[in-house]
Image (cartoon, rainbow, N blue to C red; front, side, top):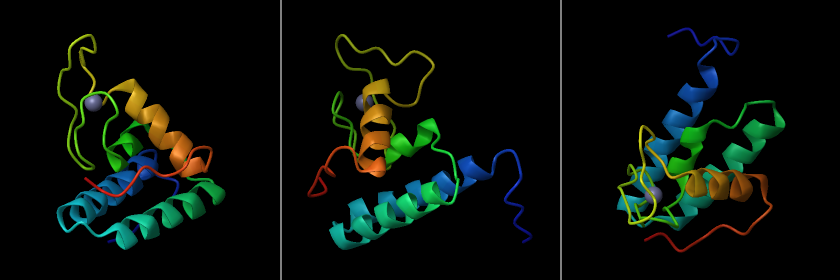
Length: 108
Ligand SMILES: [Zn+2]
């Protein structure tokens, strides 16, 4: 398959793949794999890959406790509406990937 890094949805595709591996790391409780993913994510940022909201799938949700790789569920006081993820989760993931906050862990 030809990969075009300038494709409009290439960032989404990148983070989608990362999310799938993160889900697997969670299933296998493999924190080293998860840390490796964060390293890749940070390197990608440095190369100019944009953060997209679905990078929130990386971490478990601080609002509804959805696990890494899982969609958020409605929680009291935090309706999801049309979103797959709580905004708090997206914000936390962006900060963690940028290194502004420590990675939450171990995987749950
Ligand atoms: Zn959530």
